Image (cartoon, rainbow, N blue to C red; front, side):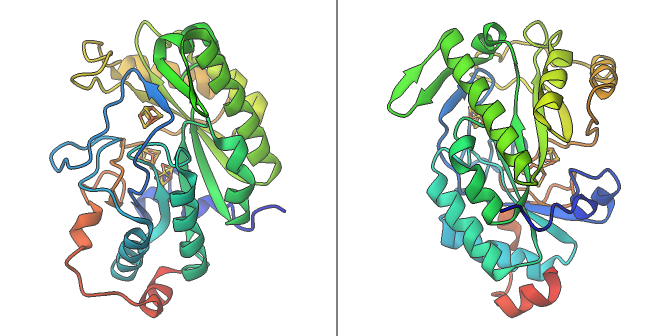
Length: 296
Ligand code: CLF
Ligand code: SF4
């Protein structure tokens, strides 16, 4: 079983050209996370902050499907429905997979997308491919567990919490297995790497080489956005020159995404617009017929 439509020409993140013509909507159904990154603080009621991990509110799967149908009916340029948090979409995979399954049935021509830390990816890669989720992003911040141990506070392995080198090694093993499995199923895979000066900034080339060997298609190096209250709150964000150099070095190994706008978990519209899913909450009810007419 391989997926039917890994069509990146309409995906605003996977194609630099497509982001001028096509937009995406994120459905914030994923509350929890099975990993704690040292730079992450999720917020569930934030309207003023725009970054990954932030949403105005969490949605139940049925609310998310309704919101997606409204969005697609009102915004014909939407080509992708993504699940990107505010936690990890596969930490409570049932919510995510139920949402995607209903959407796939309602909107057979829509691109579906997901962003994950990869810890639970080997368990769910086949289910994602069977729902024709054509694009998956895996965030890989280190391919050396000694560096990963600095990035990640802990990793949950079922009921046990694993820290330090062992936790980072477990996450890395799952990421590699998950990416290789997705690629064997025909899914297009992007790797996000959060660049943390003094932690993994000299390690980006190693990440690029490893993920290229796993078969990943694209890499997105994202400068750290220091968030108050996190372990990296006082770290510097790498500047444009540093990012340009790192992307050039990594770009010799694997193609680079250079237009990422670090979206919220409830982002709506073109990349870089400040649209949020709640913007369409007051729109007239949409029907599946509307969505089918406009969305495909
Ligand atoms: Fe969303 Fe991510 Fe899919 Fe795009 S975002 S789940 S791949 S549809 Fe895109 Fe936003 Fe950057 Fe993500 S600009 S943060 S890369
Ligand atoms: Fe936050 Fe994502 Fe890291 Fe989980 S995997 S702690 S949601 S950045």
